[in-house]
Image (cartoon, rainbow, N blue to C red; front, side):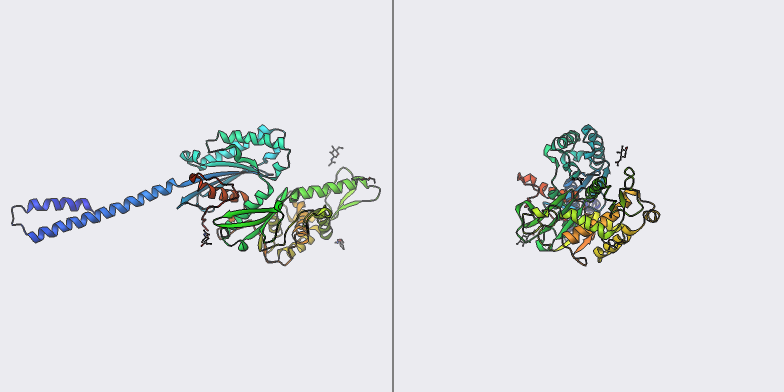
Length: 473
Ligand SMILES: *[C@@H]1O[C@H](CO)[C@@H](O)[C@H](O)[C@H]1NC(C)=O
Ligand SMILES: *[C@@H]1O[C@H](CO)[C@@H](O)[C@H](O)[C@H]1NC(C)=O
Ligand SMILES: *[C@@H]1O[C@H](CO)[C@@H](O)[C@H](O)[C@H]1NC(C)=O
Ligand SMILES: *[C@@H]1O[C@H](CO)[C@@H](O)[C@H](O)[C@H]1NC(C)=O
């Protein structure tokens, strides 16, 4: 272990023994010993050096990527760190330093009247990201902004003005940036990304398409349904993505305006309209609001809260059926939209999850339990509910009668999940590591898989990958 000491001792021996009778056998032995120890020393040195080198290489191949999610209720920055190992991207969303995120409210769409205002929150989110990425890596790390349903609902020129403001912030951020990396993505992109992160978390991405898990998301402004279907799907609902050497044929659709908040507002609006119209015919009741809640402070009681789960379920089902008479396909699920037969298992996320958690439903039989819980909640007196849930503000507490009924009329009455269907679970995270089921993670996974091979000069569409990416479970 100490080559230097061996060498000096070896160098001294001959001189001290010069005067004495040399013993040839002993000299030979000493020489061999010297050679052997030199070889060992060299070996040790080589092992140490190569370990050092590979350590350096590993550090060099660390990458960073930033995805900003422009959602309807807020803007969230996600900072990802990953590494390239033998041309594959390896992610770690849960471990130390592999992932960080921060959200600011309100969302970008709140700046419709003042697009300049959007720059402040985006700049703050960029500052957060810069603190997570080593300065030397900024130029090599991409930053993208993808906006969703809130922005989709604005007029195109307004969307573009807000996007341009955010482009200006990102352009001067120091990160690697291209103009086209700021966009309003389609609802179906969002669904695909959510499907990607779920199947990555479950370890099924890159495997048998028939063993993948579908996703149903209930957001605030839109709802998405995405799953592998072996049926022939009309092209407007059909998306194909490749991962590894597997190709996935997906049904994907985003039901714009069918998110929980927008649907609830729509129902209240139509009830208000018929209430102002029909004062002479009598009182109009709102079955989705527990009795005792004062709905319309102005028109003194023409619209009355009369919570009744069954009636609320019928009212929401009627909304989901609107336009069905125009169905151009062999059958329609929601409105005039085609959905193929359900196939495989499913995860129900976002508001499906939040409502299930609110009612403390067990994962087993949660759809039947949702009906009992909704029955109790809708039929309860508002004052009693307020006492029972003191931490909730009126607006969010009020929502649970509507949401329980809406979830049943969407999943069971419209999409056809059986009430005792074991194939559908509610979730906000998935896999052994508990990876968050956030579509932005899926967008990153697909982009990172593409980026790994960018150096070969090949460019690929984000959702049309033919690269091999391995992921850590
Ligand atoms: C690609 O396909 C081949 C043969 O179909 C299979 O043996 C191989 O494991 C696949 N590779 C990946 C990464 O899925
Ligand atoms: C209000 O009532 C009038 C006459 O009864 C009818 O023509 C109109 O369509 C109604 N409007 C709404 C919004 O229901
Ligand atoms: C209630 O009435 C006031 C004044 O008449 C009006 O400004 C307000 O918009 C009304 N609110 C609703 C919800 O109709
Ligand atoms: C709710 O409405 C249904 C009919 O839609 C009725 O049979 C039931 O008795 C009502 N429940 C209550 C508690 O009023």
